Image (cartoon, rainbow, N blue to C red; front, side, top):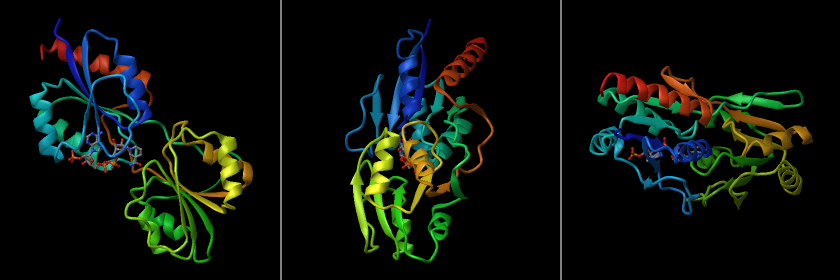
Length: 256
Ligand code: NAP
């Protein structure tokens, strides 16, 4: 039996988990794709390719050249461009697309969340009065907070924020999750943080700060995801494997 070829667009814990689940299957050949931004990426359980494809056209070419049967978009819920490119390339080539996207966090008793739709909305939600802000949104959109230079920022990211913020009071912290709740509580206390800005990323690795905020009674400005698209969707690696099998079986029945 010919192996079915899968391209997983990754850069998330879910992508790695799914790759690990599928790695031992002898009916599948897999490649995991990373954007190549992280200086020291975590090791992966399957062959990796790294770097952008060159937009939709580049992705379409890659899918054809590698004879990919199934495209799995397991990128981060806030990595919007690559997901849009994956949808366009799937439409153009007819190669089925499966979206693996972890569920967002839900607000529970004791949470003090302000939900916003964009990073600009998060900046505005901080208000006019100076506050001590923990920016836990990664490095790519941190520059948006130059628009509110009255605040003091603690910015945490895996790689350095480059170029740095223009706002005058900024401290940088380089760290990679997972983050334990007790460490997050200690960090928030040590820096006398008054408000946290986070994306509603979901998942366990970065949930500690949300729990820590609840424990300390601190407000959180939460940037929400854009509405989900239709199509084949899974919330966990296990669901994604089941759905991938279903999609590949229908391809086999059609003799594709
Ligand atoms: P993005 O804005 O959606 O993508 C920008 C460009 O980067 C894409 O057009 C594509 O370049 C390239 N790219 C992105 N992901 C890729 C992948 N997995 N394989 C190959 N090329 C990729 O993405 P982003 O928000 O910068 O995220 C980059 C990576 O970091 C993703 O893999 C994502 O899963 C991960 N990540 C993102 C966040 C976040 O908050 N955004 C958080 C954690 C991890 P071409 O157009 O040239 O193909």
